[in-house]
Image 1 (cartoon, each protein chain N blue to C red):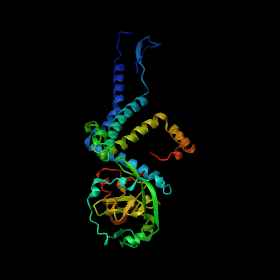
Image 2 (tube, rainbow over the protein chains, first blue to last red):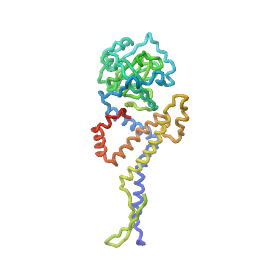
Image 3 (cartoon, rainbow over the protein chains, first blue to last red):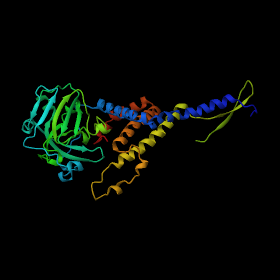
Image 4 (cartoon, helix red, strand yellow):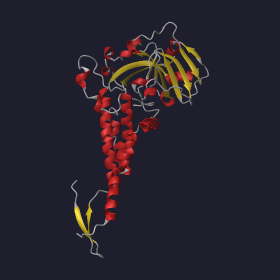
Length: 239
Length: 124
């Protein structure tokens, strides 16, 4: 060792120490309140985009045999669905607007006149639980074709009797397992499960399958995305 | 990692200086980005776990998971999912870089062609 001290070496070394911290400092952007929300939005948006790109129209969600079904009385109902949304079943219609050739009010009988499909599929909640249920109804794609919807539009937006609202991308709307569901376990939907008509989408998480449908709109522009999406949940949330 | 110090002699001047072994810069960058990502994903993951319902008296919610909210990230399920999914990509890109993107995609392709993924009853 020499007694002479090379100061430039000390300088370069301290710069290297700083460089070590640089990426952590970059991640510190997440700690800045102003940047945090846009960064997290971008991260979630990127996840949604990749989910959308990976979605395959012809690829079916897993179906199950009857013995695998969760018994109907064990099928969970979220607390807020105990409140009666007050649907008048005798007068109920699905009001269709937007990019369709035949807008108007459609009755339950008109939906039931479309080919009926039944499927045993998994219902997955964002909270982490899942059950296997038996759902029946008309394919949303059949209904969209029947009303002359513009199938190149980007979204199908629905509103519900309990002030819930939701939107799904057109690729999912046209998926063969996406149902305008009016049956569960081969019986008409009960009020707790969304009577008279709900959406059943096995390729999506539960909050994207609203109950008590009243309005349906085919559109390219969304004023609101969905009840939970507008509070920060994923917009696509495919399974 | 123990620090190793070696002496280097300049052959022209005969000056001896110290050198300390360090990992390449990219490895150190990846390490610290990963360290932060792991912390964020664990914290937000616990918040996501907090949202799991107990379904009544059989398992009371407090017995299911009584993790202090102050140690979780995101504040609520939606916020935690945002943190978790965002840092998933940061984590993935770093892990992908370390493994090498080519190796990552090649092994994923092999898994697919071997039918491993197709044989899985579910994909989560």
